[in-house]
Image (cartoon, rainbow, N blue to C red; front, side):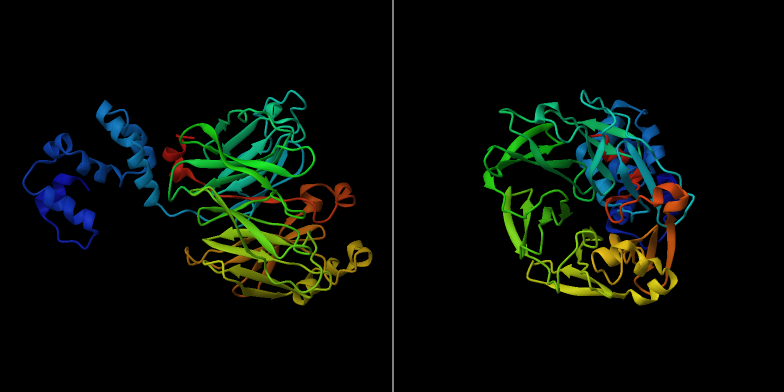
Length: 424
């Protein structure tokens, strides 16, 4: 509806404060005068325009282009849009080939199948996904090379946008141990990459470096940190403006979190465990603003999902899943060779937990069992297979498939944030 029709008809409507203010500004002036003379009012109008139309409006004039591409406008537009839930998972069991696991509609096409944008002087086929965060993927070339030989990318599969990060700042360290990605389009259109780089050949002492897409540079954030034994920073989880890591909980009773705003490192309590944890069955991740941990023990007959309090005081049980009904439908859970070699009661690996309360949909857990991936509804306890290795990999590959050895990354479509991501 145009501004003219709103002012002429003077419709009475229940709207937001911005809409009421917009109506009051339109009563004494023509819409043309308002658009020409009032940047604030024009911005309010443009905030309600779809992305595709907004892209065309950038060509109207230099003034419109300036308003639409202003960082303040982009940030406000992003904050008004809800972050979408993951619709699929990426799996990369072998170099340079990515499998796509739809969570809702099995025929959803994959945005890509190979990571062929790299130029690795060592081996161009060894492109790896390191992390995902709210729709962006952190990728890297040869993982075993020295820092000045490694190329790091941030990739948006939804828009096919790619950013190549600059090389790590001198002095060149021995090697890059861990890298993580932090991105929250609701708070900022910019992302950050955190790298822990060793500075000593004798131990795991190193520095935390942070790359900001806003400045386009690396900065030293934390100097000479000694990484404790059994603490691994391979898979950071971004939650509440901090990156979180858990080590081997069979030996450690705490985790680490890095505050990106303050540049500080702190500890938080590890989740309670009963028995020896298996890395294949454990899961650590975030969904809809909640931090979760799933610990699978060898003799476990159920899956317990823990959630962390926002004040880091303790973990509490959020969900508990009985594995017996699942094994009756999928008896391979109790007949896999892992049951005899490792002594597992049930063979499973927790891949991802997706909460959808914000969208008024049922939350669910994604589990890998021998030969299949299943989706378990956490509300009505129903479950179904959503991926079959015999179909997607071929029967001959299922026979040699090493159970529980691959990781997955959530795929979130971020088309509504494309304008913000232009500042990658």
